Length: 132
Length: 238
Image (cartoon, rainbow over the protein chains, first blue to last red):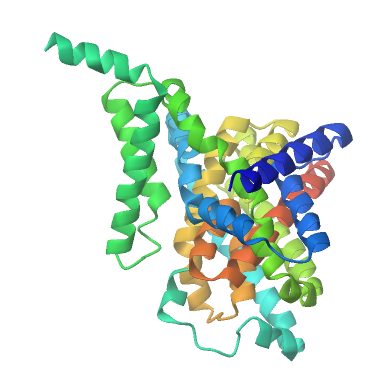
């Protein structure tokens, strides 16, 4: 447990160092994710304990965005002044992006039937599928 | 009464109060989410934000004071991002086979996110500062803030717009995908990850590991694509 949490923190630290040293336009944790991924490829499997630590962290991933989200209280004035343009642009653009990305993926997968099977594309969505 | 006030002064100065508050409110919001039959519209991040902001305003507490406690939760975002390597590795055999589809849908999705956000807000008369702050809204907060600062936006405004985008994608994304009759988990995950970064990924992971792995990958790739391409495209237009 402790070793694996240390490994994760160590990858993050290495990621921060790489980003600073090479002046990359990426956050340290994203580079840390790639480093840990490379380690797993070398190792050839996910150690049980590492899987447990990662599942624990990821099972409450949404919680971790709350503190930054509460920062909305610092911007009430600016948001109030431009509420309509910003909110309309944000919502329409987000939904459009989802539609475009998904349709392009599906179009490609249809051209290559094997990957459609991989994606579980032939199955009807389960009831839980409706709330992703 | 004086004792109660002293206790309040003591507690509100310690990080424990706002850390515990964040967890209690989120646990409550998650319970509401489960009660609603996991309806994406009952988004726990959104509910928690509203409740906490109201409580802070009611008790006249500054965001800085709140963040002294909440930073311990905030800090875990880093290790959580790193550990997205595990679902990515577990699903890698599927991701590798879809490499071309991933690259093309990433570039088109990423472009749609930036151009439609900037274009619509410009058409509706937003100021330049707001437009620039909104443009990188679909990528993970630390990168979005860096891009926004580089182009003359307000990084802290960008952070808020990024979070709201994430919530919007997690809440309404499933409706759009169902409307388009998209059942492929890889496509659903990819779309949510490109459009709504970590909050979308968190949502996707709860539903399906394949969708979660694609969403996590899409989040990382879109951060890279937007950080490199947005400043270049911006210079062409302005």
